[in-house]
Image 1 (spheres, helix red, strand yellow):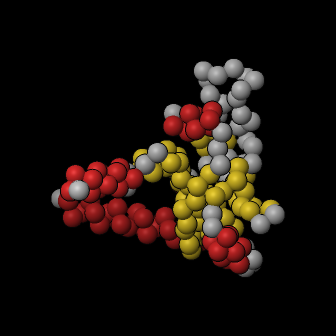
Image 2: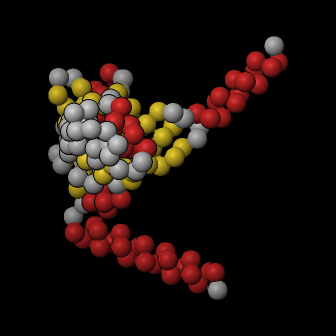
Image 3: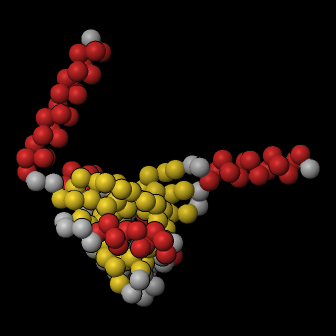
Length: 164
């Protein structure tokens, strides 16, 4: 019986491994993210292969509500190179996000506020599953971006001074 419990522990350790596949640094610069949530994605086989090879681009992506579901739009996943064109996927197709109903309702209520939108932040491997972190954010104004850059440069200077 003790051997079985050890096997369970090994499996849970594997599930906690994260491997970042794509990151949307542009969204973190353009939006003030107030809330994040982890979602699964409905993918085709060739899309999974391409994402594992690092051929995904989240930069122009956003999420939209349609028929009580959240769809991921305008995310480019390159076609897999070792598959013929007949079996390959459309690079910019709409992909359904897998969330619980309560989470969808919560996200919808958050985005109904003025200026709020849902953007993809990162795409990563969690165990054997591909997950997406989405965030509810409000677009930053130019002066907000400048202020963030100033704070970042001040922080860099402090860190470099402390290392000396």
